[in-house]
Length: 216
Image (cartoon, rainbow, N blue to C red; front, side, top):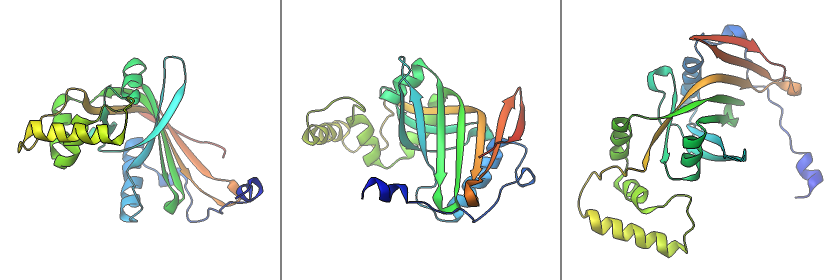
């Protein structure tokens, strides 16, 4: 496909509208309502989100992770290896952005906020609820580090499996756990015809969410 053909790819968004009267006063509760709709619509990977972090030099990086909770309707929970690139960047600069895109509903949600480590007991509870193969994988993978080959990774997995034997569940690795993003800005985007999309943004002031409409 050439650049002209790429430039001609477009879609008209016309399923729904979004008005100030449609949304709840609390941003995270409104997100939960939209997430419930995405799950009910049986969209592929409705909990997938793009997580963006920044390095000490100001270089942004993004990757897809999965949302694993909305603790107390006040935060967005995801899990990772704390020694990974994103884990190290969040430890050094605990600010991040999330983006959820649900094309089947012509919607996206942008979230910005400050990140903190999840309580250890919460991370352990979730880790030990995962399939045993995923627990082994977390122990075996030096996430974001250079490895020589796929064989090296599989050898590490075999070594971990032998070390733990029939133990189930496994202990949580000390370098693995959750992060909770506490939002200060949440934007709800609903696709509309003529690219005149609806955008409602919530901004946190103290304990109050203020709502505004943004131009598309």
